[in-house]
Amino acid sequence: MPNLVSVEECERFTVREVHDLYRQYVNASQVNLMTSFGFGRELVESAEGAYLTLRDGRRVLDLTGGVGVLNHGHNHPRIVAARQRFAERRRMEVHKTYFSPYLAALGHNLAQLLPGDLSMSFLPNSGAEAVEGAVKLAYKYHGGRRGTILRADCGFHGKLLGSGGLTGQPHFNFPTIPGIVPFTYGDLDSVRSAIGRHPGDVYALIVEPFSASTIQWCDEDFLRGVRELCDRHDIVLIFDEIYTGWGKTGSLFYFMRYPDLIPDVLTTSKSFGGGKSSISAFVARKPVFRRAYDNLTDALLQSTSTTYYGMGEECVTAIEAINIVVQDDYPARARELERVLEPALNRLAKEHPEAVGRVAGAGALWGVHIDGGPKILDLVARLAPAGMARDPRFKAKLVTCAVINALYRDHDIFTYYTLNGLNPLIIGPSLVTDPADAQRAVDALDKVLGQGLTRLVTRFVTQKVGSLW
Figure 1 (tube, rainbow, N blue to C red):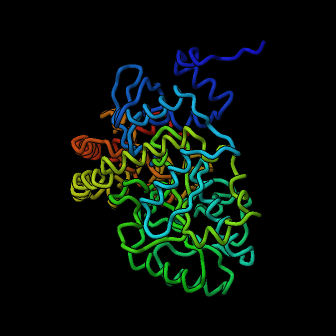
Figure 2: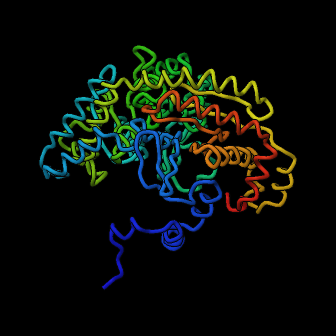
C-alpha cells in the first residue's frame, strides 16, 4: 500500500515537515524565498475577517487582501454558510447536459449590476482563463479575419501562454499567441499609432482601467478615447478588472465611475469567489457575444474550454459574494478606508522623503514606493549572485522587502510588494477591515521608516537574503 497522508495527519504537520515536503514535492526555492521574510516560518491556525491567527497565538493583521481575492476577508460567515448548505443538501456540482439554476442566477445577477448590455456571461476558473476566453471571443467575433491584438506595456493579465504574452513583463519567455502589439499605458496617441500600423487588422484591445500591479490608472479621457477608437475601427474593447472589481477601488468596478463608458467585454475573478471559490467570468455585450457564439454550430464551443465551467458550489459562492458586496456596500467601505489611508500615507511620504518616493492608490488599494537606501546596497549588489546583480530593480526590491519584514516581525502586519513595474509596497486591506486597523498599520509603517533604511536593510540582509532571487 502507498504511504498516503490523511487530512488529519497533514493538519498536525510541524512547519519543518511542511518545508521538507515543499522542498521534495513542490519547489525548494519557494521555501528559500518566503522564509527570507519574517513570515513563512510558522503555520496559520485559523483566519477570520482581516486577521490571521498563528499556531503560537499571534494575531496578524492581513493587509494583502489576498492579493485581490479577499474583499470579503477570510472565511466570511455568510459565504461559509452558503457553501455548507450546498454540501449538506447534496446539490449537484456539475453536469453538462443538465441546466444549472445557480449558473442561470449568477448570469442574471451580473447582468443586473453591470451597465448597458453587458449581460452574456461565461464562468471559467481563473482570471487568466477569463482573459483568454475574452480574447477568443473577440477573435471569433471577427471570424478569424483579423490577427492583431493590442495590450498595454505594463498590463498584467495572467501567466498562461496566451495571457502571459498579453502581460507586459519582459521575463515571460514562453511561446504565446501571435499578433500581440504593445501600446503605452494611458497614452491615447500610442493607441492611435498602433492601430494605424495595423489598419483593419486589430481584433481586440485589452487594458486594465486601474493597474493593480503598478498602482496607476487610466484617466477618463483615455478610456473614452479608446472606446471611440474601438467603435470607429470595430475593435473589441476588453476591460480587465480581475483584481479591482467588486468595490476595491471605491466603485463596483473602476470603469463604472464614468457614466455610459462600457467595454465590449469585462473580465473579473479574485473576490468574485468570495475568498472561498476559484471562479472567474467574462461578460460580453449581447451583439458581440451573439455574432461569435450564438448559433447552433458554435453554441458549445466556449463551454468545452474547461471541465469545471459553472460548477455548482462555485456559482453558489459567487452569488452570495455578490449579494454581500451590494447589501453591505463594499464600494462605500473602500471609500471609507481611502479617507484614512490617503491623507495618512501622504503625510508619511512628506515626513520620510528619504525613504518614500511616491504614494498612489484609490479606495482600499494603495502603493508606497520605497526609494533610496544605504551605501551597503552597493556592496550587496556587487556580491549578489549573477541573476540578482543583473536585476535593475534589485535595490528597490531589497529595501521594500526590509520594510515588509519589519512590519511583520515587529508589528504583526502582513503586506507585500508587486512583482510587476516599480515594485511598490502594497497596502490593500480587505473591505471588512476596520478603518482603525488601517490607521494602526500606517502608524506602524511610520515607526518602521523612522528606524532608517540603513538599519532596516542591515537587519534584513543578515536573514538569508541571498535566497531572495
